[in-house]
Image (tube, rainbow, N blue to C red; front, top):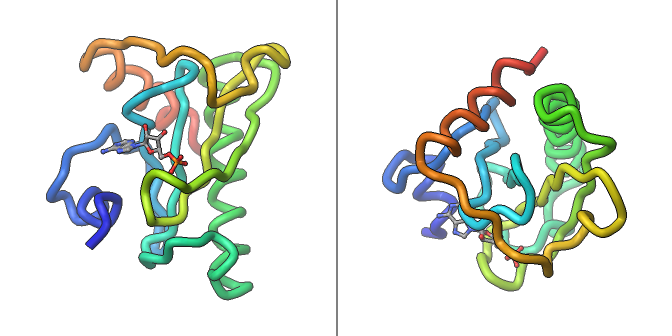
Length: 130
Ligand code: AMP
């Protein structure tokens, strides 16, 4: 079972933002920006583009909802998305709040937030979900 499946099942803790029948969103534990979020399908598949069309569309619809909530919560210019996937073999879409081109990278420094701050950030995004 992937580490992300364990998160979905509650075996490993996370800063959860939201879930629906097929998708789950939580804060990246090594945030490259405040509110850096991962959105994953509950179905454990390594490579994003191995999802069935309908599953992929459902995931992207969920990504859009989370991105809208992030933008309101964090009051940033835009939410950038990235798919890398070399580290964890469970498809995930990075949602990266940004204010400039310089912010829009996963190669930058990891930001440090306390447990309480991470909880607050997750809550702020949750509070802005439609
Ligand atoms: P990549 O597979 O390169 O797209 O990167 C995987 C991402 O998952 C990285 O940004 C990690 O910080 C993140 N990550 C790994 N383990 C956890 C975890 N337990 N909770 C939240 N994020 C994680």
